[in-house]
Image 1 (cartoon, rainbow, N blue to C red):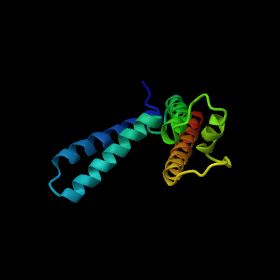
Image 2: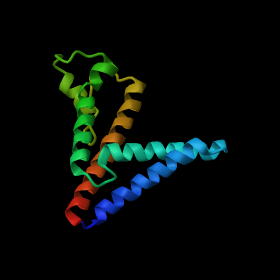
Image 3: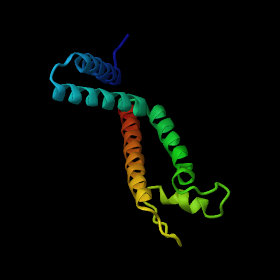
Length: 138
């Protein structure tokens, strides 16, 4: 059996994650504990979102899940019926690179949620691009 570079990278990240998990539970200094627990969480999210940049399928499924979540976001944030004629406009407002004008004012929390969602979509799209590049290069 030949170990590929992508397999080595995946296993290296898994070992780092297991080391962070052990350090998170055994660290005595609270600053070090917070830091290692935060990094352990980041590594878990990185594995879930794209398989450490090695699984384009997982990255695509995560991006689709995120877009489906955004589809229902106007209903949760603005309490708008899905059957409302302006619903596509509200949905498009949460997507990156689209500018949508409204007749009614939008609340401040909607802007906070919008910028958070735009950041998530951009980051997940970048993870998908990295995973595709890694799959095609190796």
